[in-house]
Image (cartoon, rainbow, N blue to C red; front, side, top):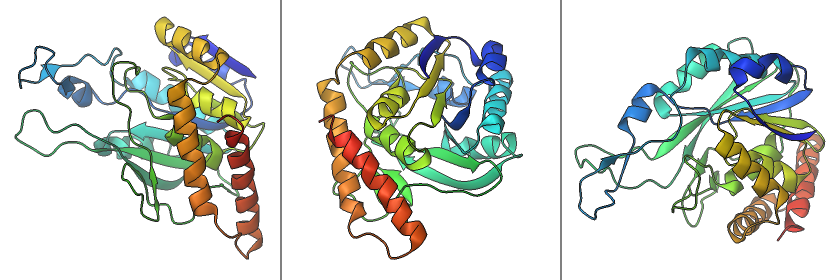
Length: 278
């Protein structure tokens, strides 16, 4: 299955729950406070911040419950992005699953435009798993997804996107390549019910995973479909190259344990798949 649907998860939930979803990866709308406080540089060239419309509404209780239902249906991992202050919301919403870890994504951030407080330079990825045995394909030293060059051991450098050509709140492809690779296996269905510009789907396409994408915005779905049907853009190819390099950097020598060798083999196979695209 590779599909992009223009649909709101709250009304399409029954259909989504019929799909054999292995992994949920989603960047849903954030809290009302985050949306109210969103700002950017003033286009008139002065120093005053201006209100920024993110292009979609803040998180509703109905959407939170629908996402929790999808997470409960998934047979393996569920990864949910949020602002740092809302991690507990997703731990509570997914209480029926095994809570595994909360990993920050330390992204690039513009300076705090009001000048009266520190900027918000990170988001949180709350990670759950269906009850039962677990495995993943990522580096054992991971402590954060971080924007830093050069990257120290234990962090993954996935700098956030800038510029007018990015979709609102779009996540970088190298970040999503990591999440798809590390938390799913080939031929396992990955679901992103708030897909935006389709970056999760692009990562699945590169790594050989089927995907099920939804978004309530018709414009977002059109962008995602066009992107997934076209050759890789220069930006996506460059992000893929960066991801391949980061994978090669941590793979190194195969571990000497059975589980470590299996994880290494899965990670290397995905790295080889991605390298074919650059």
